[in-house]
Length: 441
Image (tube, rainbow, N blue to C red):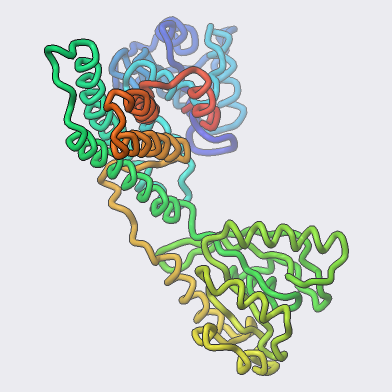
């Protein structure tokens, strides 16, 4: 099935492989299939019983998504009709596709590189416009072309070194200064790709925001107010929140992943202490801390300690419960001068906080998606591995060792860059990549 389960206007069953024409004659007998021409056809089961009247769309190899003969049967979107059509195709000689097998076959047929294949999965999974734009841009194959260009530069250096070693009388040893400069240029480009990955990840996934503060500061109430829904349990009893709760919210043109956490305090029971430990993990991994303090109470030791420990990291401060007082807000120190004072019960105060968070979420401009850029952690890991190998080669040249000693580091960088477009991909890597695809794509 190439369409989601459930009732809809149309359901599509997709078939790929060398037996497509024979299968088509069994399930849509009499249909005169012509490439890229939709043909009205009666769909029948293995016994010849009519299941539906739909469209048969044929793509002849190699001008198809997979590079093989491909047949699409467009039937009415009844779950029963879709299911029976799929069964009819299986009885006619097909087998069920594995996740991502259509795109995997396209990759193996040379229809796309591995980075573009990953972009297909990202495009399908995109739930934000920025994520869709980024994935669509990667379908062009620009990343693999960039990786091939960088590989080619390093391969020329490696060939030059090998020639100097094999034919020392005819080929002079390369100038270390020139090698250093060339390697530095490739490494700098790897660093740029890695930097764009970090920026692009924030655009695609949203800014991670850990809501932290002492117990009863109003963290869960604030989460509910920002979401506009009663998502978290609110209670006056300290320690009500025992685990982290994550929700996404639109902030201007950006997104944020809000993580509600357990209140931080020194004396807690065993279960509450486990929640506090998870709070510490969320705080350490979040890109931004939303620190919530009870403004109505004087600042105690725990509140002051939390304010002090978050001063060296990106944060937004919100002194809550201003409707009950502002003693804590008035006692804040100079580093907290930019704190907001308000109440989760006041829509204007919540909107002011939302604007502050939106500014943080949009702090980095959207990358230029028209340039080659990384789309997955796997790709980022490959680029960083190449950069590390090149750094080692630079160090060897810097300390004056023989130039041929950098050959191993160059090979490591070449292999890592080859993984971007799939030139160095093995079956285990392909299995891991395509396992996250939906069936039918």
